[in-house]
Image (cartoon, rainbow, N blue to C red; front, side):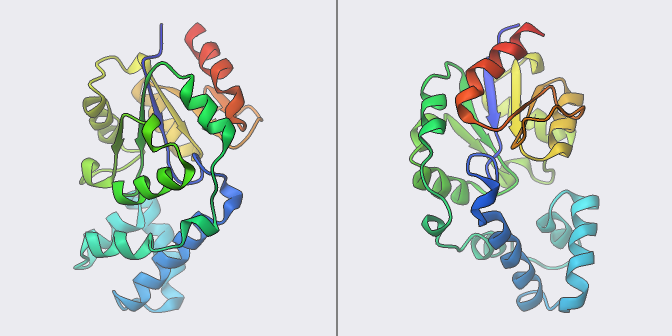
Length: 214
């Protein structure tokens, strides 16, 4: 079956995990929880793990338990000098240029952060749309409702024509259960939680061709 829609995760996928950007965002999340919500430092690591497991993201957990202003939170945690962490990747540009499908960013961050990242990477024009945390409210990846909303946003009716490229195993597992093809990004080692793995964007055409055979 031909693939017509490819959803790309944002953080640690369209830019390398080794960049340190997501680590910096995590530090900003902890700082927000301490300075803006008043949570003691010693409680934050366990609380963040629990929120991640129970709610999908720290934001969703905070929203469920504290009077948090989402826009303030998202602006604060993403307030970083992106160009100090990430740079354009010619392989990513080439892969996107040659991909004749709908291409959407599908992220648990917000569209403002996504646009800034894509602008720095010089690939914003290659994406048709962004599905962000606000579009998914009150859900987030890997909840089944998030994949349903992403398909609606892409005007895609058939889950078998969709691909998710994501660095998080729980997201590829969730997408596979929903009927999507899945690509675990950041490794070449096969993993039962994804249909196929990918670590170099130059291999993307071959990966998608292999998925279409299945």
